[in-house]
Length: 509
Ligand code: URP
Ligand code: ZN
Ligand code: ZN
Image 1: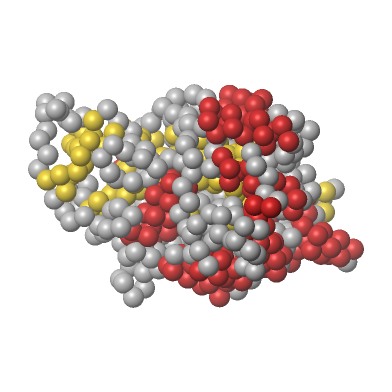
Image 2 (image 1 turned 90 degrees about the horizontal axis):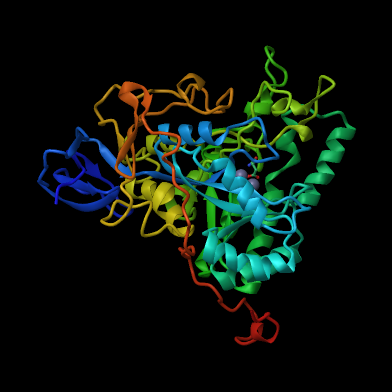
């Protein structure tokens, strides 16, 4: 058999180890065919020389907002997915967002799918954002989504007026998701605490962007995270708490994990690198803090960042996603919606930060690939777990995405060799490929960058030539299988309950 591509002279990183130099990757028909030494080339084999650099799986970014109807000024699928591959991410999972008035998910998925189809440089799938969980949806449409459409995860909000669900809704959905093997993602912030604070801030005229960080204190995330864990424990369901930013909330997760509950956690680059001081106004632009408005908000102290780095290193976090949620800054329908008659009103600023392109480089730069062991924040296998392998498994793409193993899609990032001085040293808006007009990471230091991105055996990004080489029609829709539970066990009896107590009331499907 003649390989289509052989990648040689690189250090292949898996979620458990780094293979020594000499191991090569043979690719055939877009799949990894084998890993071996001295693989034979044929006349048509494309040989890619990694020049001694690390080779990691193509990034899987499981939390990306693109072309959502409630955020119309940010990225299209074209710009968002282009940005993804230029940053080494080959798979993105975006959201199809149900409106409260939608009584069926089928047209919602169709609508979002039509926006993405033929418009994506990266492979992609969808999670649902569920805001109106009717009986019909849970009982009739969830099985269709899971078994026919390949949508095997939902995101639930405990905050935001147009989206938030009651605890009872959360319980009903968790029960349905558990029965079908769907992954439940939860945005955990206490809505009433936040509403009370916003009211008080506005009453006192405290409406600048910085007050967004005051309006959503850590305790709101801590309480809601603990509540989400308790609800999940009651019904024996696995969950993933998304975009975590607070030490105490992360401790709740860690304690739950220690009890073998299937509680997964996600954090994002901005909670590791950025502080709330970014939301303050500058003499040159009093509204610029809006560029850093996201929820949960950026926290106040360097120790807040440190606490999250600990969760990266000690295994509490299961996945590391961008939460790419793009809104243009200088656009009346974007962040400037928060300027009401010229007056800043933080509560009207669209939430979210762009970051799909910068996610991998930021984390890789803090790994042992770029720093001596004493300074490195994480090992290379841990980098691969967080950015590729775990999100692929959790969201039903195990066996196909997120690992460099025979039979998997030939999706890779080849980095610059450690000794190279070709990689950029700080992030600038100018170097990025998204459609947003700023990056919240402007000036943040990095130590490497994806030199090549390869998607299903095709080089789609070559930074040396400064080019996205892929095509907008190349990205494929991924029908996902059921997600794997990566932490603990489902169905454990909650503390203090009798072994068969839950069977007395749990609905049977
Ligand atoms: O601020 C954020 N994260 N906005 C995007 C929507 C969400 O809650 O993930
Ligand atoms: Zn969220
Ligand atoms: Zn989000």
